[in-house]
Length: 244
Image (cartoon, rainbow, N blue to C red; front, top):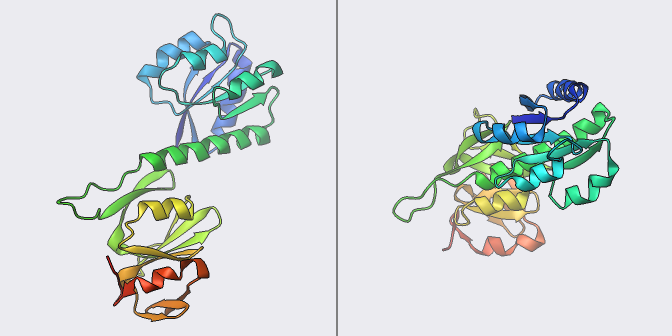
């Protein structure tokens, strides 16, 4: 869930933003503010992930608002003035919406914010601290807007599914998980002495390998093709374990 603040000196604009936010399941409106000064006073006391603000406002405009903050949430500008677009992107805002904004355009901006929000959570998701120099035993991944603990030894294999990774577990009764993450991203999080990438679409738990062929490995009755760029991984496997 993304906690939102909306800022505009026009009550009607605030009402329209609030209506759009309430139509999107992953957005939650937390605060309405009439100007940037009011918003700046509220931010230190409230957990805000995304600020949707007008640019042309009295006293402090939207550009000055963003620039004044040391610790910034995500920002989307929502304005009737096109002239602020270029300087706004220099401030690394998520999107720039020109009034009047259709719901479809607003949803597009919200999805951009969701993607950035998920990437930030992923960067902040840390492997469990290892003890006595041992490899970490679990990691935390973003699943359905929550960080879920995944025990590494429970993972059977991982399959790429377009923009998602599907995690399959050893226990067949445990529900497979879809994680919005790239193959490279999840590969970097996994310990390389336990998991190997054998194909552009597959990472497997090396300890579960039951048989090896020239261009394939097996986990029980499941056959995984080994593509050419990853064939060196086969030479590192003996008796189902990586040679360290």
